[in-house]
Structures are given as structure tokens and as C-alpha cells.
Image 1: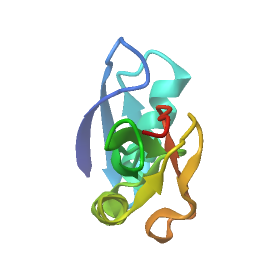
Image 2: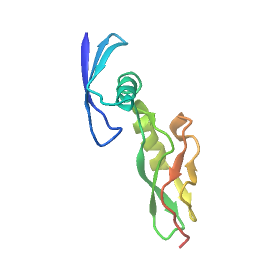
Image 3: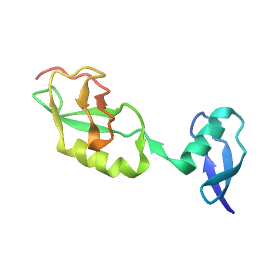
Length: 121
């Protein structure tokens, strides 16, 4: 049996969770104080995902980069591909919060959206 130690990131409590596994099967989850912690731990050991937050180039704007993020979490193993796609991309001002900057980032099916507005220069 394998034991994996995690710190839950779903709320400020930061519960230390121990997941006991046998192969791909979860035998037990201990240390969580709520159901969200249990679900987080199960997902983290099976299919970990992360929301990627970064910046993207802006052409013709009052600033040359703006903040953006994946609209949904992406598989953890795709983070470097997502960052590569974002680093190659750019957008044109004006940009509003929530605008889709990359419709399907790195083949994940998940868009990258603006988290800041930018007016034209």
C-alpha cells in the first residue's frame, strides 16, 4: 500500500490529508474536515488539475501585457504546453475582463480569458 500526504487547497484551513492507495484504488482518505477536502484529495491523486494564471502580450494597448487565466483548471501535465501556447499568443486592445484570448489552449478544450481590461493606446 502507498500513502500520499496532501495539503488541501480548497479553503484556508489547509487540512493535512493522507490518502492510502493500493494501485489505482483509493483505500482511505483521512484528515479532511469536510467533503470538499475528501473530493480534492481523491481528484489530486487520480487526475490533478490546476488553474493557470499568467500574462499575455497586448498589441496597441495602454500596457504591453495583461493578466489572464485558464477559464477552468487544466490537467497538471498540460501546464507547460499551456504556457508555451500563451507565450506565443497575443491579443489586440481593447480587451475586456472575461474576453476569450485563446479559445482552445494547447488542445485542452479550455479557453484562456482576460482578467484585466485594457484600453487602446
